[in-house]
Image (cartoon, rainbow, N blue to C red; front, side, top):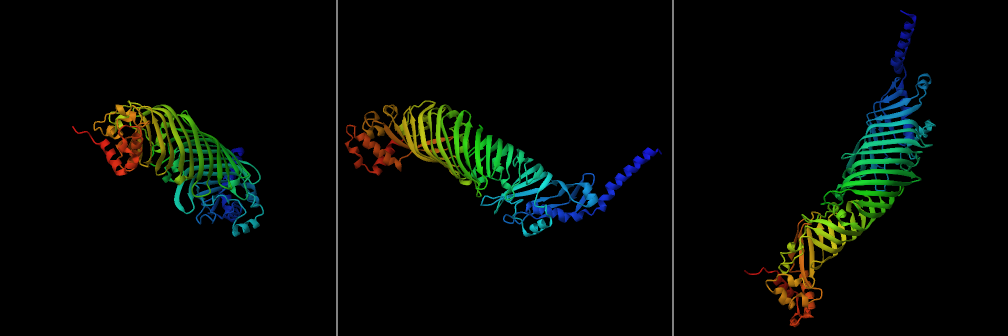
Length: 566
């Protein structure tokens, strides 16, 4: 055998012996207390490892299991568990001097539980802080450098993050979480990358720099990063209670910068299939948001400013405050939009539980609103004023819809409804919407006023009064003669503003039903109207409102709604 070849074979054999035999000659388990002590002191949490093994090929120690305790103020169950952990070490110092120098940490299949308490704190906030337990402090005293955390590379592979709230058993799970960080130190910045699969589908990604690690609160560690999310299902995040009715798929691109406890986030977002109330339907058009928020990490509160909301060509300004200190986020946000295209806004109405009548579409006009959203997200209240102006509601024949009211039989409004103005004071909650001081000016026949509600199932309950303008009532069929006799000759010679007819709107917004209202507020409305008519109609002296009681008024009005005899 050639001497050169023999020498090569001998060298290979030596290497094999080293790789195979040396790991068994080094009692690596003797380093387990040192590793546990260093990790416990650095994290401020009790760290436990399973049996260790050494691999010269990878230059690492491996442990069968890893358990990191939670902050006892939050939970007695582990903060992190993993099936295995690999710790990179400098091999030469380990082999020849039994010195342990950690170069990297790779955690496999970790499960991390993040908990939030009523004070607005997270259980990860105390990681690395001086508030370690007694055992960890003792370990730190035995290892002078243990309190100075420095790792060349940290990796979490195929992790699971569970998010929840202290005292609430409900949890939300994020899968396939990967974290990569290098040169981690309490002395300077280090690059970090995070990716995860989102609940209900979608992806999350963060890339940037963090550090130096905050020694008192890990949540205050400075960050400068880019964030992106795709198809984030709001109803599955774990941060929004499902009974709020809030939902949609969020696509996000933003930048995050934080320092000295103050964070700022800027970017844009698109919310598709938006839903803002129980009983609503996902919007067919997306909501676009250009936003800027500032957040106080210690107070868990923030402000929204310089933020624009867009739906098609409709633009509104958003500003206000929010607070995450409790179990639910508390908001106080104003939304103001002026002269927005009504057609674009109408496409978004199903998201707040409002549907246009079947077959009807908005072809023109504008919308203006001044609304405030306030309270916890679990019971959000939206209130303020809203109105539409110079709107054409195509495919909606109001005259035919109101034909069941005999006093208005024959009213001709055409197949399209022209709305000069429609305004109301609104209050929307998870149970539905209430409209007060409702006023609609309809050039075809007059004015409608009233108030009512739309519940979470889209049912209508409105008490209304239609005041027909002069000339309209004369063209309306009145077979019983009741209306003419009551008003002493018709609206054209009676009240200057016409005749008022009370009615109710029932059914749903998609299929409204107009029915007579001969009781309740009807008597008062009729009494006022008869007083007006009596003041200018010959022979109406007996209709003086001071001589008319509600019972007589109701009977008189009831005659208006009787079907004519054949």
